Amino acid sequence: MSILLKNATFINYKTLDFKNTNILVEKGKLGKLKFIENTADFPENCEIINCTGKFVTKSFAVGHHHVYSGLAKGMGAPKKNPRDFNQILEYIWWTLDKSLDKDTIEASALATAMACAKAGSTFAIDHHASPNAITGALDIIGKAFDKVGVSHLLCYEISDRDGLDKAQEGLAETDSYLASNQGLIGLHASFTCGDETMKAAALLAEKHNTGVHIHVAEDLFDENHCLQNYNKRVVNRINDFGMLNYSSTILGHCLHVDKAERKILKAAPIYIVQNTESNLNNNVGFFYKDGLNDNIMLGTDGMHSDMLQSAKAAFFTGQAFDTIDFSDAYQRFRKVHQYLEVNKFEGDAENNLVVLDYDTATEMNSSNFLGHFIFGLRASHVQHVISDGKLIVKDRILTTVNEAEILDFTKEQAKRLWAEMAK
Image (cartoon, rainbow, N blue to C red; front, side):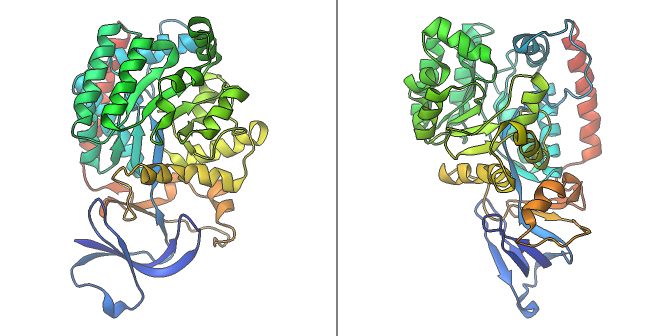
C-alpha cells in the first residue's frame, strides 16, 4: 500500500525549496514521489498520514559506520590504560572485535540499524571487523539491517593484524558476499595490510567493479609506518595499487595527509568521509578540507548513529580547524546521497523520507533553513521514517521489529561480549 503524506511542507534536499503539498510515496527500491494538489485526486487505497505543521524531506544516510561497536556503550574499562592511538585500538577496539561471535554480531547489527532508523537514516555504509567470526558475518549484518528496513553498503575490514590466514578469510568472505550483494572491498589501514593483501584486495575490487573502503592517516603513525616500511606516504601507496581510480572508493579520516597527497586526492574521483567526534574521542587530530576534492561526506565511525549530531560536530569543531560554514556542513551531510547515486548503489531512491515534528519558536523557510539545520534540528524531531516507500518508524516507534524484544536480546548479548573481553 502506498503512503500519502497529507498537508506536508516538503523541503527539496538539494535546492532547499519549500512546498506545501500532499505527497504520494510509491513502494520499492526505485519508488517515486507524486505531488498531489487536489484532494479529489487522492487514491483510494493508501495509508494517509496527517503532516499538518510537519516538514518532510529526504531521509539521512551514514557515510562510515562500525556495526562492531554497536554493543560498546557502557562497557568496562580496558585491562590497560591506553597511552596513544595504537593502544586504543589494541586494548579497546581490537579486543572487542576479536570477542564477537555470530550472536553478538547480530545483536550489534540490530542495535545499529534501529538506532539509524530512529535518528532518520535509511542507509548506512558500514566497515565491519570480527576476526574470530569472519565467514558469514556480512550476511548476518545485511539480514539484520533488512529486518529493520535500513538499506546498506557493507564490507569486511581485511587486515593482516591477526595473521595472514585471517586476511585470506576476510578476502574470501568479501568475494562470497559480493557475488550476490552490493558492497565494497574493506581494508583496515595501510599499517596493518602488507603488499600481498593490498594486491589481493585490489584484484578483488577489479573483479567486482567496486571501490575500496579504508582508513587513511587517521593517526600520524599510519604515515610514519608507511614511510618506514614502504618509503612512501599512505595515499601514494594506495594509489600505486589503483585503488584511487574508483569513484566508489571511500577513504576514512585523512587527517594527516600532506599537501602532495592532497593534490593526488583532489584529482581522484574518490570520496573522503569525515568523522569528527571519533577523532576528538581518540585525540588523533582535526579534519580540514583545504586541498582536497569536494567529495567530502560525513560518518559516525561507530560512535553513534545520529547524522544530525555529526553535522553539528563537524561545523562547530571546524570553526577552529577547518573552512566550513552552514552550507558546507549541510553539503557534507548530504554528500553520501551523491556518492550512492553516482555509483548506482540501490536503496537511496527518492521514496526515502523523514517527517520532522519541528515546532520551532521562529519561522523556518528556504532562506534560513541552514541556520535551523545547525542550531535547531535534532534526532528527537524525527517523528516518522519511510524507507523504500515503507513506513519503518511511526510516531517514533519502529514498525518493522519488536524493539523491546530486540533490546532484551542486545542487552543479553552485550553482557556476553563484555565478559569475553574481560578474559
